[in-house]
Length: 153
Image 1 (tube, rainbow, N blue to C red):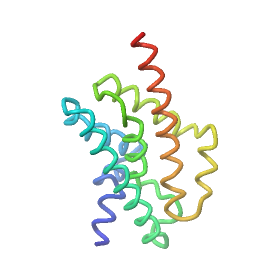
Image 2 (image 1 turned 60 degrees about the vertical axis):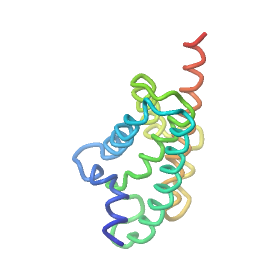
Image 3 (image 1 turned 180 degrees about the vertical axis):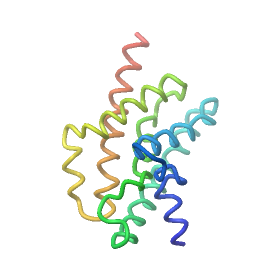
């Protein structure tokens, strides 16, 4: 079971890649959405929602299970970035433009941590690791929704 937690928490190993592991994790999540581009939107929302819930729970649990070994917010844990990336895209038409712009917006909010995102890191345990990326994904989603509305009009 520990190997399973390590596999999920590291974003299928992407968090072990050199330089900017969070970017790699978000990129893996973005690539995982590509097969959903031509799928019924309600099914896409369901799949993304399930991924968000499952990966949030597993990531928070993994950080707690391996706290002594990994420390408080280990760089190689990127499942939280995957969750944030999927949250960025929920409710939007999945196309290459939305995925690419969503990726950039999510990484901006995740790195800059404005508007209370940084405060969520103070929550103890695995949920502090996950929730800042959840809020970054929510902000990125809202901005991407607004951009889609502006472009459509």
